[in-house]
Length: 334
Ligand code: LMR
Image 1 (cartoon, rainbow, N blue to C red):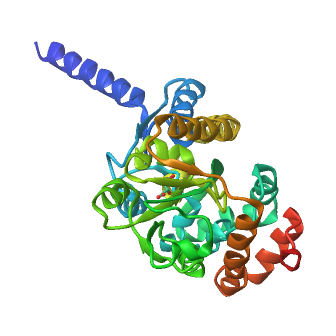
Image 2: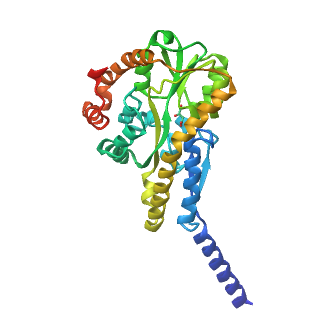
Image 3: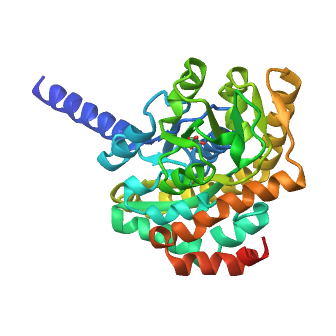
């Protein structure tokens, strides 16, 4: 009898040890945009490939649309270990202690994705990810979204049209300076609150790539959308360094491979997703689409480009110079 119960105890122990060994490592991946956006789709893609390449040792749970945490809270959750991965927009890194990421917000700096990638894959992009390590984070990749449009309830074509408009922005001082440069009044606000703020008139307008504008239905509460393409919005995928370094080496290698695939995927769908979203906005007929003339574009550019020098101390003059070289941007040629 005694031997039997000892045997039973041993069997129970073996079973629970095996079950514990088979429990997957859970990665909670929180983000604030809709599932049907470049970031939403890329995070799902990563989740699938992470499961496959680790042979089930890792389970990535994606929480879209601020369902788990909003902008500010998700940053805190990552630092506390309540979530393991995020992909905040590059405009939101100052609270994490790396304000230089705001260089990606500089208006009219990048003409297209190619110029942008020259920077993310070049020395400046790499150094910024590296700098995150001093903040207890690991930067795993850059993911594209796209180029921003402006929206409001009155026609917005030239800087004068923005005078006095309350424009929602992300938490970036470069974006703050950009809006002030055209006479607008910037209002920093969490992404999850933008639709309601537009609907109730707490703010008059905003900026975002079409994929975000459309999937949050912002165009339904904005009468005009101007195709300004005045700035870029993209992401850095980040994880908690302590968590990352604590993973078994084979798991980390597999996750790196899954992230490389997801990055390729994200950057291959971003432009098309934004083009399609803009087409849907157009088809909806809810807001009038304003296409800037060459003169209007120059007027906006002239007003906004001074922000590059205004923000040089914040983001590093040498960073700006390196980017000018990489993209061929020449402020004297405006
Ligand atoms: C925003 O707050 O407007 C964007 O950063 C949202 C996002 O993650 O694309």
